[in-house]
Amino acid sequence: MGLLIYLNGKYVTEEEAKISVFDHGLLYGDGVFEGLRSYNGKIFKLDEHLLRLYNSAKAISLEIPLKFEEFKKAVIETVRKNNLKDSYIRIVVTRGVGDLGLDPRKCKKPTIFIIASKIQLYPESLYEKGIDVVTVPTRRNMSETLNPAIKSLNYLNNILAKIEANNSGATEGLILNQFGYVSECTGENIFIIKKNKLITPPISAGALPGITREVVINIGDKIGLEVKEENITRYDIFISDECFLTGTAAEIVPVVKVDGRIIGDGKPGKITLKIRDEFHKIIEEEGIPIYE
Ligand code: PMP
Image (cartoon, rainbow, N blue to C red; front, top):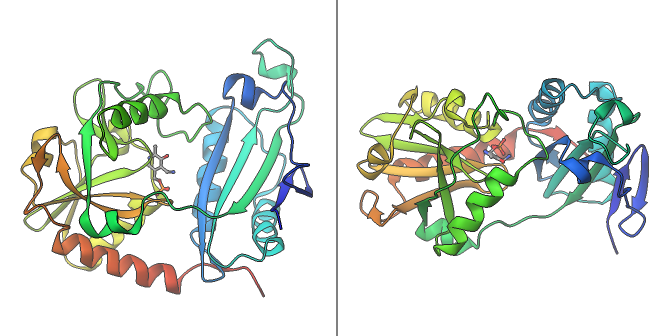
């Protein structure tokens, strides 16, 4: 049986879930999105994801025609209608249908859709072995042009970086900002561990304020690491003891090689695995119940 998709207030089949070729989300990447997960019948960090969605929308002057609580209900209902316990949920809000000019004032009603499905970014074996990452030539968008803190539908910067990582045969691409500092990977935040320090680039370096990033920062505090948000260079990664990526879809992925340099002893690090364990405990415990 196919999926039931929320589209502008209705639940429709995959075949019926069509949007106009005049939608500015498609024509111009004018819109915002979120990716969430549910674990064991509970949606993880639903409020946090919706808050980021509303913030992204605000930053591009897009007024979401649903109240926060209504949106929350629609997300829960979409997962429920698809009978999913463990799912990946995609929320998209576009500027809506306009004409062929880019002026958003011509778009009278935002398009909203929610898809509840499944995702597996990497095979299980990569979580056990760790992944290799290369620095890509494409630099991060400058905050003054298109702020990477906005989770907008305009993802070409990330896609170009992904293409470059693919071309060099690596699993992920590391993106530097215009100053040469590390921002993040194509769809994940990055962390390094050096002695007792857990370090991740600040949002101002061109990183998305990741929800998993926040969870990991709190885990770091809890297990007694010194957590720092500070600018890092490729060199800092090369000489780190451990490195890993975080994201809703990817969860926590150990990195064992960066630009040909082996990180630590070339195996997923002990602290990384401890953080992963803590993360798994949290996703089991927390979340908004879908079936109540
Ligand atoms: N950076 C980028 C560019 C992303 O697209 C994502 C995935 N949404 C992340 C980081 C990780 O964020 P989160 O933990 O909220 O999924």
